[in-house]
Length: 189
Image (tube, rainbow, N blue to C red; front, top):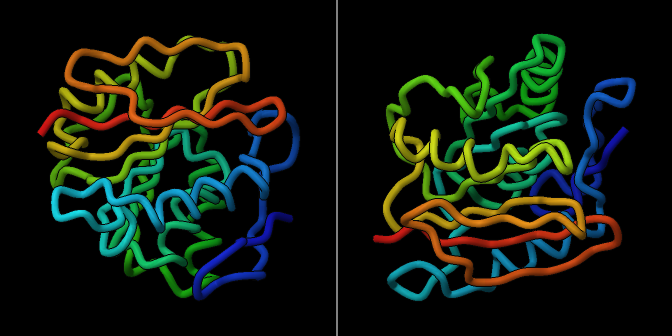
């Protein structure tokens, strides 16, 4: 079981898939990331990119990042994952928390996503470590219309893994938490 670390669902448990197929972001890294997002003046008007955001959680796994964003004031979250059992579990977690109306769960490969109907201004990418999928997935999501101009993108990588951001994205922050490195990018306006 994972627990939501902040916002209106703080302390509530969400179910995680069994086995090694998913690697949830640690509570410490999630809490640190969301503290950064809550206080960062990264929107053009100098406000947090989290409040009232349209969120995309790609390679969603447990859905913890998107659910955490909803708990902390995001308006809507879309979860993308290619694993059917994971998609089902995220839907169950959203229903249990009363967030199903503010979310959509899509079974899709983030490197070959369906067209995005409403671009998201906050994107979480958490591909398998050392898979090399972060940059191609981000480029594919951007090309499919999932990433809004000026969007903030957080990418979780292994601590020793490199990411060359695709064209149109610039690195604006980076943090390390144990075996994880969070790289934060901004999409060109």
